[in-house]
Length: 212
Image 1 (cartoon, rainbow, N blue to C red):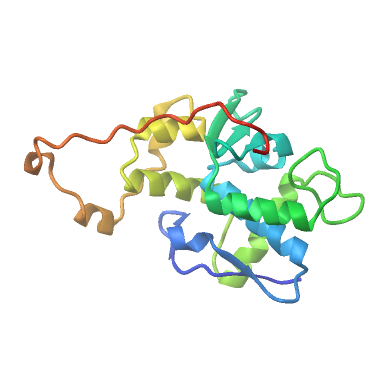
Image 2: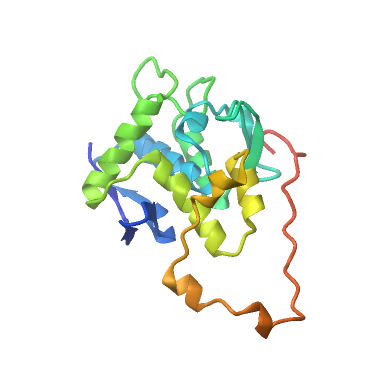
């Protein structure tokens, strides 16, 4: 089975991807279930800023559709946290769930009988195959790295990005800051807008249902 990624550009020097790189296309000879699962994995790794270990531990009940959140258990710092669930990632998860209706404890499972929980190694192998076909190197942490960089470029306060990434120290988040020349060109000096207030970004709420 062959995976083909529609990576449109790649920042080789920074080790992170442009936003358009996240869409994954698969050849027609790949089974439908395989395609949907892998696309959902890539979407979640990026849009929910997950570590690969956090992704493989996700359970179906950790996806909160009503509040568009993902509940992350046992993160690297041994603390649970809430993070974002994108609309596109949710669409892919729904397709994956419907097309592969097997009983499971974890959200992502192996496609081979007896459908054990997906391992970190399996995700790494899949992403390497995607990158190989795209002619670039891709690994799980690159997607998380890309998310943080894109959020910073969009003007999201670094302390908010820190919370979503699950970092205890702000210095851990600062290593993700990469400002492109295009982003710099679009900036205005605070001196040119002295009366303009920054929009407040509210933290995500914890209420909501499991599948509602």
